[in-house]
Image (cartoon, rainbow, N blue to C red; front, side):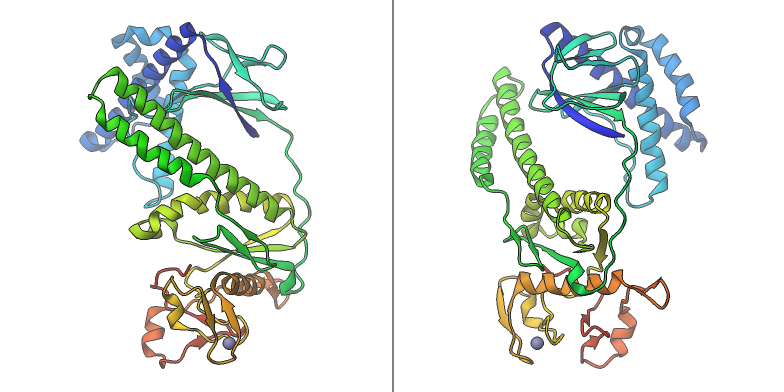
Length: 413
Ligand SMILES: [Zn+2]
């Protein structure tokens, strides 16, 4: 299954049909969410997908205009809500309780059936809406499964077409024989990513230009009267600017991950960063969102696996930029993010913070990806807080000469 996203250019009439569908889908979703929540709170009952479907029939009697839109899009709303609940119960603490859909913000509806696409006339057929002009900037292959129509806050329309494709066979996994077969990657703020093979990737350029523009547009929105047409117009421009920045970041993450996954190596090691915890630190929050690391590592993982490369996450408490990659000495002064270069007081080796980190990540990644004793993997070594309290002040050094760190500390960049 592959998903392709294309821009739609609906006619005025189609726009109003779409906006009606967005509204109906939102209404159904929100009513069903309310129904499920109350069923649980008042009667301690779980209203499942089927009960919700019965409730949807009743909703159609109360709101007869629901019959004017594609009924399958309404059913999709129920299915999506059900998925949101299963996610919530399946990943406790990780996924939040489903939220009500808002009138402003991104709008969407799904068409699970009877959708057609025509590459020659460049249009997509949506039930009840008709043939909508569309730009297929690249052909898609396979049978259409579902189409999700979205309207971004900037007012642009998109169709995400998921198509059934024959499953791609992943390439056979390459063997990790030495640390040279592993690329260690240190993601950072000054440079987007530094690899242990000496390649560096810069942060996307031109972003600052858009950021200045964004500030100007923000001011322009706040100057306009609330509820006025001009304010809405300015708001759309601002949203467009936001979307442009997001697109650029995504694009950059795609390019870099493709480049790394295309290297002729057996494994890729990345630090397992606690992005949620880090964004709580306001100083770092902006730059971290800039770099969109979460998205980057997710894409890198998929691409590596497709290319037969092992993807290894190195535990995040491992002090990557503070440890001398030659002798294993841990320099506590390097914790200060402003220290870019340092010389190891033990062996005298010169270190650049990011380069050192990438080499340490490479070493650790190698260790974690090599099976020891007949195919079994070495367990990830961690030092618990209790152990540390009893341990002498000296660093705890593991076999590879890498210093393990207190698990409660903030990750090092
Ligand atoms: Zn050293």
